[in-house]
Length: 98
Image (cartoon, rainbow, N blue to C red):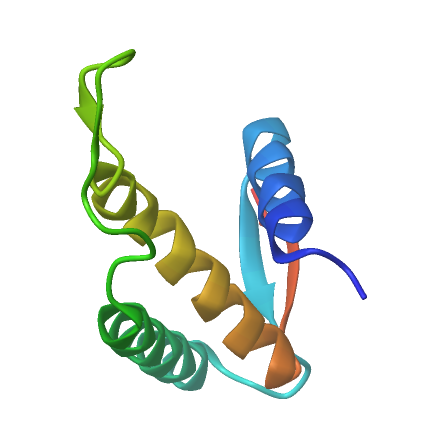
């Protein structure tokens, strides 16, 4: 089983090398957008329900709260879950037509 972090990292690297888009045979742009919006909404709700991973604790070595990592990490977690949702529906990331 592939690590979600590894998959997200791979997607980021591929995006840096060129634009990618979601594709699924037989699906038009409107249906794709509807599925993507639904996956993003589902991911946002799932991350919101999960709550903070750690209680906020100030680390004197760094002067930050550990709990702040949740706010910074939230968009990454949402995107990872949305990508997983799209893959589960049969979509794949392919190079965008230029």
